[in-house]
Amino acid sequence: MDLPHAAAALCSVWLGALVAVSFLEAPLKFRAPGMTVPVALSVGRLVFAALNRMELLLLTAAVAAGLGCGRTAVLALPAAPLLAQVLLLRPRLDRRAVRAIAGESVPRSRLHVAYVAAEGAKAVALAAAAVLLGTS
Image 1 (tube, rainbow, N blue to C red):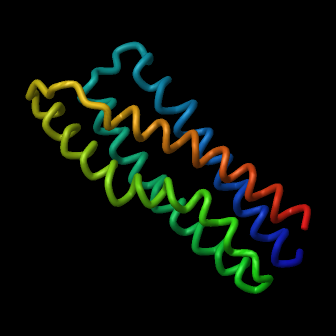
Image 2 (cartoon, one colour; image 1 turned 90 degrees about the vertical axis):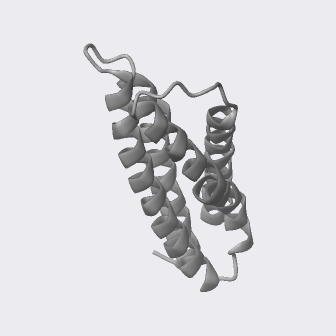
């Protein structure tokens, strides 16, 4: 497999993991019978921390593959929302979750909406990057 196709494949794997976790597992978890909000938040914190670590690894691998073919610019599209999530949004959401898990009443916030919007933007960017890298 040549380097652009390897980078495209990495973007595709990343997109699959993102969709599975963010758009399937996360919302379904809160609908599971017997699942409490504190437990769901605890699981969510672990799952999204692991997902973000895996995403950073896949981004690094895709950039490395892209460097070999001079096509790394397209990877800025999914990298931007990922970095916003890792550096800005998830730390704040984690602090809120810890407070809610401890039983504290936390006020409404738009952080979760921003995180979901970043997930959507990242999904579109990954699909575009996979196509652009895979067809060139």
